[in-house]
Image (cartoon, rainbow, N blue to C red; front, side):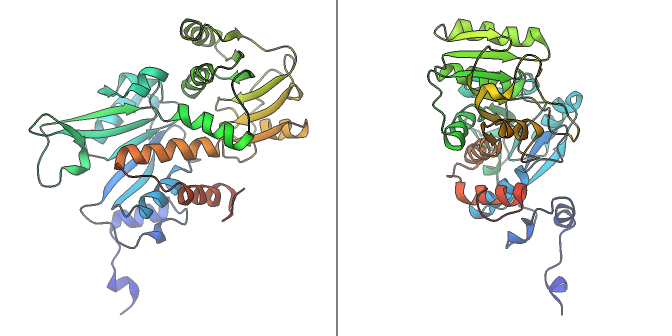
Length: 334
């Protein structure tokens, strides 16, 4: 009797293996069964995502009978997709481009982090028990909740500053920073940088009014930070790309090189992690800047999301190794 006949593959597990062949599925000792719970990341596009590799490695290390998948969800269907997660009782969701701002209107409750940073990148599906207490939905095994909700969180803000500290060694307090992009991730980054007491923050966005709105909010909340919409003159300590420009082959640089040169930046950070070195980072490196991509940010926001869902401490080293292998094709650090 061969191995397949001894251990028949559940059709959904076969689908996962065919569609998420990140070298992760073989790490699971137990097959998918009727008690397996699902987590997902929603994005548009989504095929570049390394989150399944990272999260499935963390889930396996914690001994959870869960699986994590990636779903391409167009912005106009996001509300329905979140409602679908509630209906199907998914454990939770991660949200990536372009959903982080949109989701604020589509979740049922906010964590304090969403109130602080104004965007949702993590959702926990919860049920209300007979005493009125909201619990993670996976805890309802023998009973039925009387109501189900999606609670939103933001794990990006702390992840970006931790990655900047660890990957570039930069001290944000007193720094001059140019931030490219004022969308979901960019807005969170701008507010977090201001909270870290940068001295000057320059905001550039394709839609000028969006950058102006973020700048106005920072002026209200952080009067000690000098904020300007537009490019800086002279040297900056840090330049961050918080746009999606660079995800697709052939994308231009995410800034106007007639108004700014990366040679003005001592350090350069791209929130994009695939490709591992975007033209933005390659140009910065050629100009002598220290560079880092968004792998660290992905790691720390994802680890925090796993902790929110599971109530367990995330296995950071295991999740990092899975990310590095997935993005760089290597088993060691980059």
